[in-house]
Image (cartoon, rainbow, N blue to C red; front, side):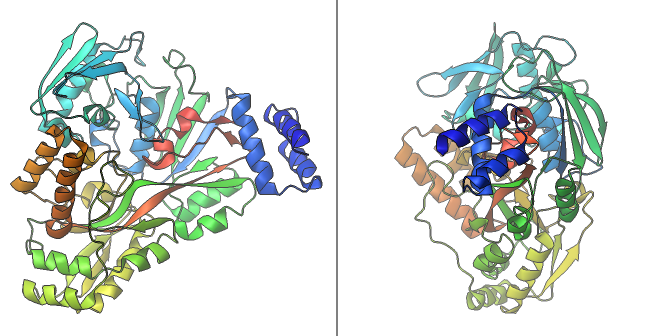
Length: 528
């Protein structure tokens, strides 16, 4: 039976038998539809990518303020759009290993202080210009300038000098850092002609697809770049990404066939959605987390007792159960978990404790309500999560006032601007990258305004420490400092839940680093 099914699956994968006929034959042989779909997916992978066609994606996280400037990439829609059109020096695979991209190789001095990246030859920008090491240098220089407002500004601060040496891009660090090649995979650091110095939002990159049209907050249309350096990816002729911020509307678009892929599936309906005909729900567990941010430098959150009261007043287990429907795990008011290297699992897990929360709240001296801003643009179920937080805090005598903000403009007008708001992070593959991006005093994306010289010193020491055991201890101290003194309330790490039509799409492979195959679903998948 297995040989016959395998043969039939191969025929179906090559288009010699339609899916319905294959499922019918499989059912006659006593095989479930789920198992048959699995066999068909494997056969499609083995048969190799099919070229051509149009991919239509329905994506949340889009706003009218979205830009083509990679430095300003702050939500899921621009992340997907720019990942499809651009390349960084390196990328991170599904197992957390570094992969070559614009840099075809790299090496360092023995002390990990001087890094040399060999720039791939023959890479062409979408405007026909050849990508050079000088374009890389200027790209990194722009992101090192605070005026660029780059989300990568924090991770660039450890660089003392950058230069071009022939086809090489050479970086000298102020202190050694064994993680530097991982930092170069940050999704803001997409290489642009001339570094994007003259026009950072020109939309000219070197990726598998090039820009055709862009309507911020509505859609982007891209077409295959014929001269892309990697012929193993970029299989569709055209990719259309539609902004569909409402989760119910996204699911409906998928079910009706209007789109073939959606992101940010609400965990509460994921199991229901997967029962739909020809729909696969993919959930990847990784570094991402849903959170609430307090500005440590803004009243009333300047009081660590108030911050601690709010951390103790949230029921993490209830959040994971009711908001994530089990598609995730409890957080510990730190931005990292066991998915990153050198994580200290021995740090005590914070629990919901209304009595202790009430103690710290009284000690803070604050009276009256605390305003929390939220929107489902922050993360799926963010409004419901705020309501649960409100209920659990009430048992500690804390009154949370919830203000629901509009979805459009949330990442521009609320996140990193208002002192207490719902947020999410896709996470980063290493602890240094996560802490450097959002918690160093110099980080442009320090969305809790946590600024502590002692913490900064720990991260610098961890970068320079090449002994894994000592480095783990330094990260443990840094994580504990954030947990006990920072402005991050992290109740839950989420799975990245996406869905696609398995009768239209092949090549899907989960990647825990970010949403939608680390932003590369359109690049790596193909028409079934």
